[in-house]
Structures are given as structure tokens and as C-alpha cells.
Image (cartoon, rainbow, N blue to C red; front, side):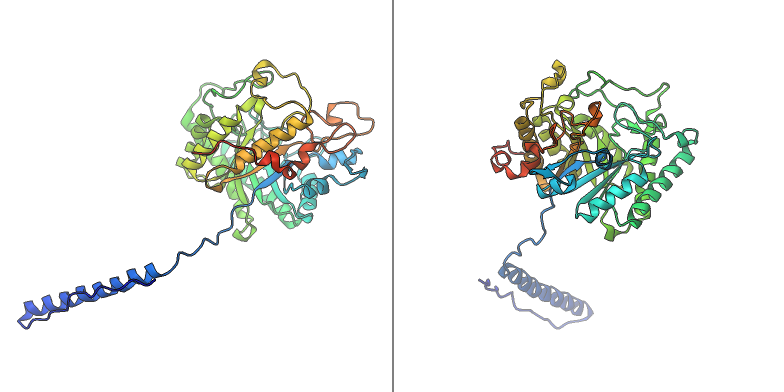
Length: 424
């Protein structure tokens, strides 16, 4: 109902000299302003609130399938019902929408190089998938234990290294775009908590109270003498170079989102330390990417706390860009096993993935936008001699090439709707 307008006091004009004339003009202005304000307030009050038309951000269930083409070339079997099928189609019909591909600079056998990756990326885009490109800036694995420069970049001075990173990134993205495979997400670096392109862009990570250090996972420290300000300046310049390389060959219409990826899924103190540095430096990124493996990165409650604090502080979308869980007993060390509370069975693997999806989707502000499972495409290869030629414990296919229950996790509303601790 429109509110009644209360009549303002009548305008009083008095006759007099120049001073009185000025007073009359001021009184007239004030009276008109009162009338206008009354109409504005009542008019606004009479209009119903417009419902928001903004669509919620999509949630991506994704997979890093970087070895898919190689596995297929070697005869890998992906069963779809009672007959062999197409792995990408199997994932997509079960609701998996985002596919991540790592990119190495000059790999020995070409796998995960630019030519290999472009072909697989085009296949993903042609199938209607969302594409994430994961730059390692190395000829091989880059992760928290190592961030080795490509061999061809090894002797560049730092300014030349920055330029090379920009140009290489721009060329790779342009190649993908020209092939009809423009990525939707681009990771500038892989698990770069300790920096990238070591030692030039290496930084000293505070000792985590959450992360499990056992086996091959060790505390890494930069070479001495160490200058923290200098090293952070180097890392920021490298990140800026990679990001500007992406931006230089894409447009806003390409909707490419930059992801910064660290390995601190359950570790808020180290996450804050890292992204506070990026915030102060004004780094231009869109999404915070995290790795979360329970054997290394804490409990699901740790993840929930980290998501809440990260979103509250930075107001950025967050994605778990790497995760996995075994479907059979891997005999982890006691330190690694303490957070592996789900059974190491096909059902436990599915339950883990459902719990993680539910936790990320429930994050504040709708900013938990996805979960990407790492290396689920490992499968049965007839005559395979070693572990990399068949399904490993974390794979989502069994020893005969049949999908495990976790592939259809989105079909299980019982798991996805379990009571979940709310975010305060």
C-alpha cells in the first residue's frame, strides 16, 4: 500500500531588502527539497523488493585426466555396461563436467606437452566439457617437493626468466585458443606453496601444524642465504608474468579464470600467510585452488574451517583442484592414516568423495565451486607390467576396467544430503 504523504509546512515568503531576498531563495530551495524527499521515500516504499536474478555459480565435479590419451593408446579398457566405451563419455554421463590437464614444457616422450595436451583439450571442449589447464612450468612434475625449471630455461637470468614465462604462457594459451580449446580455468603453477621455478621464485613456507610429513613428503627449505622480501618479489613477478601472458591473448568474452593453486586444503594459517602476500602485491587472480588428500592435509573439519576463513577474508571462489582416496588398503603410515577415517574400500572411496563435495558446496557465499579428482583414469591395460600401466588404489576404475561406485557419486542423494556441520 502507498503511504500517505504528510503535508510539509507552507512556504512563507517575506518582503525585504537584498538580505531578505537571499533568505527567501534559501527557504524556497529547502521547501522544494522537502517535497521531493517525501515523494522519493513513499514511492520507494510502495515498490515491492525485486527478487535477485543472479544465478548461483555452477558447481564443478571434475577430474584430472592428463594421461587419458596415453592410456587409450596403450589399450586401456573403460567398460560402459557390458562393453568397452569412451572414458570421457562415461564421466560426463555421470555428471562430471570439468576436466583438468597438466602442461609440461618439454617432456621426454611428449606426453603432457603442448601438442599432446592441445589434442586432448580439443576433445574435451568438443564434448561440451569445462577445461582447466594446469601449467607446471617444468619438463616434469612440479609439486611441493620440487619446482624444477625447464632445461631450456635453466641458464636464463631472472629478467629473462620472467619474459620467458610470459611468452611461453601466452603462446600455449594462443595455441589452445586457435585450436578451438580455449580453457575456462588456467592454473598458473601447480602446488606452488613454496613458490615456483626454484631457486629463483622459491619462498620459505611456515612450518605447518596440519600437514603430515612422512615418506617422500618432507619439509623443504630454500638455499641460504635467504632474503624473504627478495624471494617474494621474485615469485610475485613470475606470477604476474604468467597471468599477463594469459590475459594478453584472451578477451573478457573468453571468460578465462585464473587459479592460484597451493597444497593446504586443511591448513588455514599457511593459506592466510600465502594469500596475504598475494593480496598486498595486488596479484590479479580469480580462484583459490587447494589440494586435499586426507593422508597429508588434515581432517574434513580442517577443510571446512579453511574454506570458511578463506572466503571470509578474501571473498574469492575456492576449488579443491586435487583430491583422491583409495578403494583398497594401501597400508599408510600411522601419521598418514590418522585422518583417513573412511573405509579403504570402493564404498568408502565413494563416501569420502560425497563428504568432500558436500563440504565444499556448503561453503559460505556460494563460493565453494568445485572438486577435481586426480588421476581417476588409470585402468586395466591388457599385458601391463607395472603400477603405472593399470589402475592404482586411487583410480575410479577396477582391475577389469569397470567404473567404481565413486564415479556415480552424484546419483547418491543419501550420501550427498547427510547432515553436515553448518558454517558459522
